[in-house]
Image 1 (cartoon, rainbow, N blue to C red):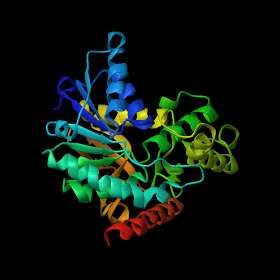
Image 2 (image 1 turned 120 degrees about the horizontal axis):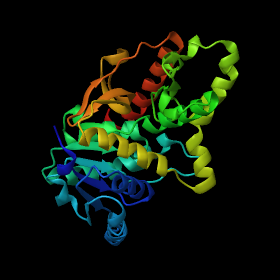
Image 3 (image 1 turned 90 degrees about the horizontal axis):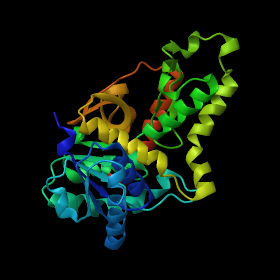
Image 4 (image 1 turned 180 degrees about the vertical axis):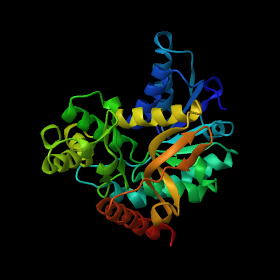
Amino acid sequence: MLESKSMKVVVIGAGAVGSSFAYALLNQGFVRDLVIIDLDHEKAEGDAMDLLHGVPFSYPMNIWAGSYEDCRDADLVVNCAGANQGPGETRLDLLEKNTRIFKSIVDSVMKSGFKGIFLVATNPVDVLTYATWKFSGLPSNQVIGSGTVLDTARFRYSLANKFKVDARNIHAYIMGEHGDSSLPVWSHVTVGGKPLHHFDDQHRPNDKELEETFIKVRDAAYEIIKKKGATYYGIGMGLARITKAIAKNEDAVLPVSALLNGEYGHSDVYIGVPAVINSNGVRELVELKLDEKESNQFHHSVQVLKDYIDKIFK
């Protein structure tokens, strides 16, 4: 078991997402060492100093601006680097430029002798997680993408508002691409343990309301980008949640981007699915029984991602 006192995390990219993730880690106190790497080393140094000044109000933690050599003995490298998603730009529009950036980053990390777990946050996250797996040569269980962990959090939050209950009592998943072809798994939504389809019409939103809820969840990033330029607090918290599952060997079920090996009838693609996460990375995938509509939507999402993967590797 990998205990939190020995956890060393390297975050690559001191932009808004990387900084939000670092801040979330500082406030949760389960990491010993945090290294920040950025092309702008002074920015990384400034972030480290600023975070360290918060240590008296949080938890003991070593934080410094480092280099790729610091990855050698890291337990986890979290890649938040890359070009940002602009207004009107889909996550998959970012593919070609971020793939080139990732090749350089992954090569530098692996050159250090890194043998830990890669966690990818940069969009398009599913394709770039696949690229990281290919470029690194690491076993697939050690390469994870943030997947639909944020989409699912948005989904649970929206459903909690609909049903007027604590979001922690909503169990629900968004699966598929972290992007426009994602799908809500309505057949597995439960509220306080009660399946959604067991609610009568008086206490359950109608189909139109449910579809509107999903569309708002799916398009939330575009709305936030339109209003403030980027999204970073939510994904920072999502990355911290995945990191905690690894640090504390939790065997937590989280909807991350993981490699399919026959699950859901597909292989050789990274996509957002529920997976058991512990100190070894992905222990196993949780294969849900999807209804016919969900299954078709998932197959479509797989094909969208495979088409883009083919552009890079085929």
